Length: 136
Image (tube, rainbow, N blue to C red; front, side, top):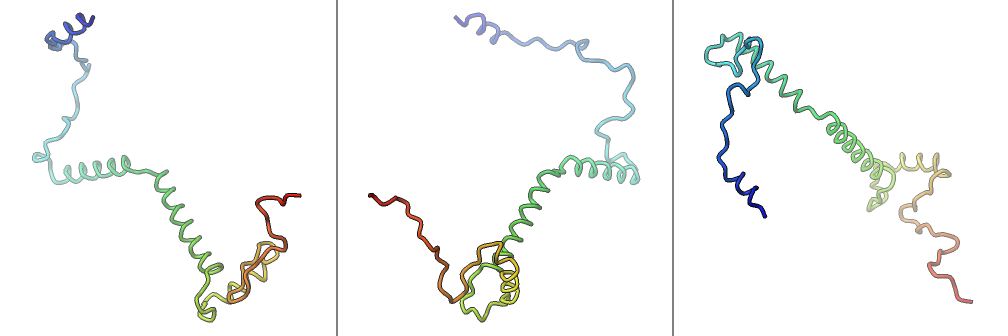
């Protein structure tokens, strides 16, 4: 069944002919990679700068960097807002942000649902929500 395939796989590979390689019409201007030992100090410095610039451009990931920066900004901001406006401090007198919190909830209290005051009764709904309706 696979006789032809096996015969072709077992056959020795043919060496590439020199004429099969593409030939350039003009000779190369520079040999790559350069012989670093034969370069002058100025040429070495120029070569190093060019190499470093190319490596930096090649390794730059602007999309990834932007996502990381935005994630860090979001996490730091949300933790700060939570600590200032919503976190319950053990003794309410030790809250260093009490004035900021009161001012915020006085200003925006009608827009947002105010959290329960520290030390006060928890907020409740006027009518409890039932998961199952009462049978008649």
